[in-house]
Length: 380
Ligand SMILES: Cc1cc2nc3c(=O)[nH]c(=O)nc-3n(C[C@H](O)[C@H](O)[C@H](O)COP(=O)(O)OP(=O)(O)OC[C@H]3O[C@@H](n4cnc5c(N)ncnc54)[C@H](O)[C@@H]3O)c2cc1C
Image 1: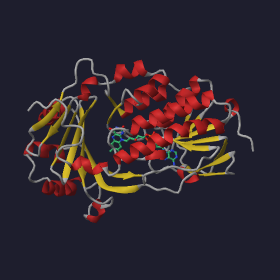
Image 2: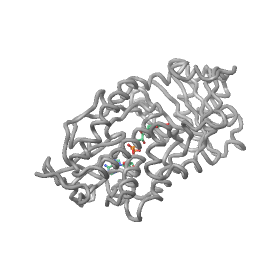
Image 3: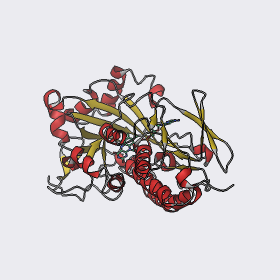
Image 4: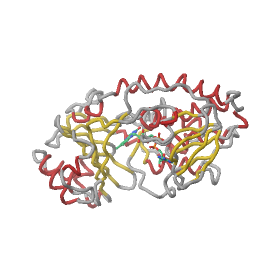
């Protein structure tokens, strides 16, 4: 069967994360119709999580292609590039203070980035409350999207931008994410200058990392006077139930953490147990390395769906770069098949190379000196 021409193709993006939305935005800028389906009931359905740094050599390139770079810089926090390394006693062992013109990787809240991208799309582009179950239809296309609500949609191109546990991925690959042996527990703090001044001072304007070889934490400033802390531990994915607890049992989790981090300074322990609201469980998964798939003329993947890696600061950047490259390939190629080939020829080797470099890297977050950090301008 001949591949449809890109100008007439019915394009469906699954997932309204940073990757899916960037792809839809750039397609629309090139006059190409696209529908985005997301399982969330609406844009405000869940807290989008912490702060992201968008890099000049990938995330910012994608925003430029999307015509949104200036608006990004209006929202971004260059001062968020400040980074501190602390020891378990709470002393600063390395400290990077960004220069006045440093714009390599300014921070932005996930929620702000999502709003920026959503606001740039034609009204009605995202169809909320549409959880994909599976992709059916013949390998040559057209493909059939089967949703959990029983509806179906036919598409000439299915773009899987549906994250770590993608329902599009099985159409091209049998790979499944595996737990890295590392789990994050997220804690957040509101109104920090007034209510948590010691935490505000420890974290500074950007991020602070502390570890003792077995456990760690990464604290980050978010906009609106919030701080978010990831407690990083070498535990199985189901460690909470194994401990006889539930994630809602804030008191039980606090007691367990106080015991584990008992030898850390009281100042740092505040970041562990004085959080506002419940903890959020974030077991860290990654796809086996290398992850590639046989070319399919009607289905492709981007972002975490294509190359879920440990969260070491590249995930969203690669998702957005993939998205921009795929959208530009579709705008430039004659057929859908040609565009997917052009995109995957560049994306797959890059993803494999990065995943190989980061493989096992989640455990580096437990290391006293995170590789690549200590060479910054240590001041104390
Ligand atoms: C704790 C943590 C911290 C991180 N910190 C950073 C960081 O600082 N910097 C960085 O670059 N990266 C970070 N990452 C990684 C980053 O979050 C991801 O790489 C990035 O969000 C991937 O974007 P995406 O668009 O591919 O997928 P996602 O952001 O996961 O978006 C997927 C979308 O698909 C939707 N969806 C899922 N399943 C379905 C379905 N079946 N049907 C329909 N819709 C569906 C979801 O609702 C979601 O909107 C972190 C990850 C974690 C876990």
